[in-house]
Image (cartoon, rainbow, N blue to C red; front, side, top):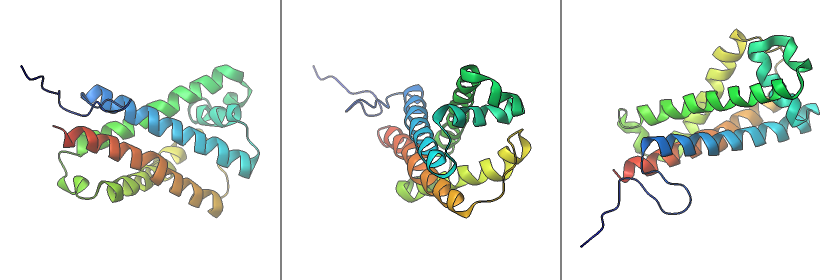
Length: 167
């Protein structure tokens, strides 16, 4: 009697047999890579520690109060961060089977999607939040675009492609 494998891939530790697993891994991997890159870049450029980076994220909702809110605000920032990453992962997962161009070259698609995430965050989300406004910094912007392309969009695209290519 042959045992058939479920849809998706279960090789390695990243299981993409179900939509839930696919979205989970897209969110966890892209979210952690994004957070790590943010902490490194903002430490090197601005001298911020990880708690301050997470409080900065929380300030999008809580305003200046986030910076004096200690670990509770840092935790809130972490939650907000992963909610945003989940929404991006869900959008890509939903669009992938509906827009055939997305599966033509998954690497290019992922990189472009990551740049799109950066654009949406910086042109729509952040200006309409309580994040303190800062002058434009070209070095910071280039680093953010590169990390969002390579460390956020690309993993989401690869994980999503892995799920749909096994269907």
